[in-house]
Image 1 (cartoon, helix red, strand yellow):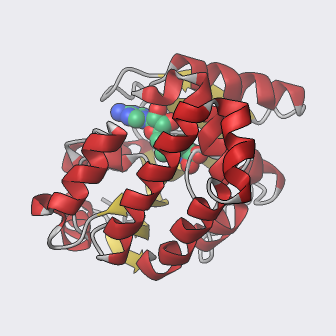
Image 2: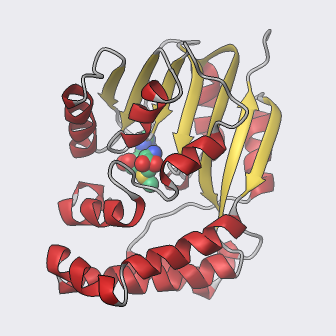
Length: 258
Ligand SMILES: C[S@@+](CC[C@H](N)C(=O)[O-])C[C@H]1O[C@@H](n2cnc3c(N)ncnc32)[C@H](O)[C@@H]1O
């Protein structure tokens, strides 16, 4: 995974904002949390990246405590240092995990949050079951992820984008994610397809690395990185426009009694 490459990381933040390794920034977090009040709650952020979202969860959304977990040591280190620098380390803590191992006891959290991380995991049912285990009864699993459309699995357009960008993504469709959440025993499952929103978003990404911005990007991160980023975003745009990449928000509830 390239997340431990400093240039790659800085390039993502150039596209999506400081502290964010996924599109949308604070507005995307607001969209995800629109019907979920996390004030005073203990929150697990699964796949926390460098922690920009965790800072929002405590300062804007009033979470009592956020525990961020991720599999990349340099990301967890940066998230931890940034939380300390901002004086938030009494409310945000981080844990480096091995893929597939969450060692928290059953019913540790009121809320599980996750943004654009499930795409990295091949077994969506297993992670849904594990996150269900970690939630208290009545707790909420809320987040967003990059889902595919009906043609994504077989699309040459998707293959070209993933191969060029060296991305090891594991897509599922909205109905498959819905099914996994239900199989894991979540209730009140709601999914919101954000493909239309990201059609605009991906155009903005291309603007950030083309035209007059291309030279700035190349000066900061090198000509190779600029050319790669522009081509990768352009290939992604074709995939988004074809409906084969569908960022989707979700919310699911662990029943109050099980
Ligand atoms: C697209 S980034 C999103 C990071 C953060 N949620 C954000 O939106 O800024 C995906 C994150 O998932 C993490 N990740 C990948 N595989 C994982 C796994 N098996 N368990 C936990 N995190 C994982 C990556 O290291 C990366 O930080």
